[in-house]
Image (cartoon, rainbow, N blue to C red; front, side):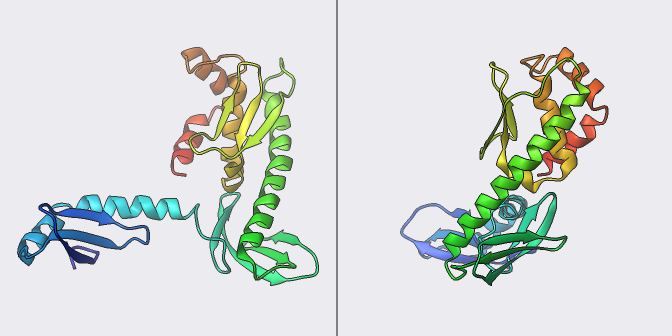
Length: 221
């Protein structure tokens, strides 16, 4: 053990040491056969900060990527909620302050449960995002609500096309409402300024004076 983590050593026919943080958070050192243990320990200790940072990044990613299985913590509107799966004659999803409950005919088929939940989340996103977009447009009295598209995106929370269409990432449904509103306001500003110029930020400031605080919060997700 080193620092606040343990590690295992895997001896291989190789010439150099290698360090890996695996998907489950465990730490593995791959070392040449016969290499003395003190050299391995020093190698790990010199890289302790990197190991801790990597484990933290993985932990942050896992909060969004938890497996769909009973007891998993799934995020919805900024709050982690416990997933419950129940047998039912009808496919229904319910949510409260602490849980997401999936009632499914095929409740033992977790891939089917995952698809049911994904469909429900997308439906909730469609309803909520249209509502928040209509409210967000009120801060821009010289425009009509633009066309809205939903898509699951890896690198962006939202985008605005040159044709004036706004696309929102369906993963936004996992974020607090204040951050959903911030992403919408950001994209609405792009209808006027298709860049991130000072004029863009002046318009964003007028529409949402506390946008900087919201942007800081968004980066935490």
